[in-house]
Length: 267
Figure 1 (cartoon, one colour):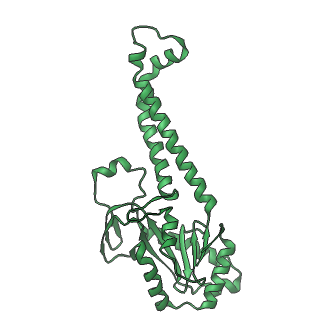
Figure 2 (figure 1 turned 45 degrees about the vertical axis):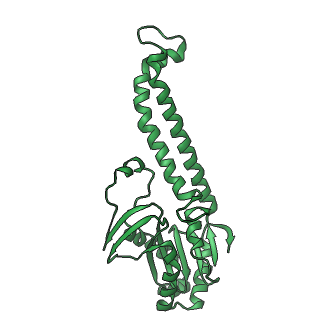
Figure 3 (figure 1 turned 30 degrees about the vertical axis):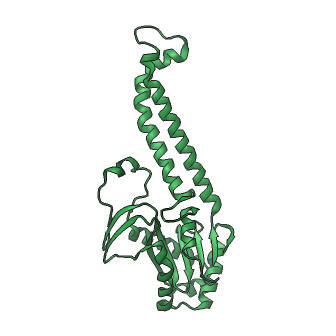
């Protein structure tokens, strides 16, 4: 299987996440220090030095502002880290990024299949005999209820504390539709002969849940909802049903690889 990863983009966002998390922690510590100001510098006595006087005057505002600001910064940082940093996954001894979890579950395909991670308009795309498959990837754990076009996570008090850090289930159907439109527009930018050739290539999608601790309750989903270990069988089944010609797959991957932003990485 050919792999086209935009490693620079993923590593840049991981660094951003770590910096935001660190900044959030620093802001929280400043707020904690500010809350001790009345003990360090009693308000009935003038504080020594500029810093002491500043803290004595503004400690209430600093303390009140630091808590939400630090929490938001740390949570947004955690959001990027969850998407782009390596970590240990439930049921696995490997330390991997989400894109690596998906590629591991795709191992075994030959070079007819290409996997694009953050290198095309959709975040995750697989191109092969099953046509173009766009994956809306989720890595959170917990309960997810899917009923037709509706995707929801039942309320849980524990999620209040990770509201900014979690991806959330969102609406994979709408996400896939939006990304499919962007990818179709990219195919239409090919020369006239190629664009006509690509017009009949099917573009489909599925929601993929990477975390083995997720509990899925599925009723007539608008797009398939898969666990990571089901993706390979799904692609093989769709390949038999769609049977996109090898020549079409080759030309399609040649074109998409020429338009993708990636650093060399093959398995």
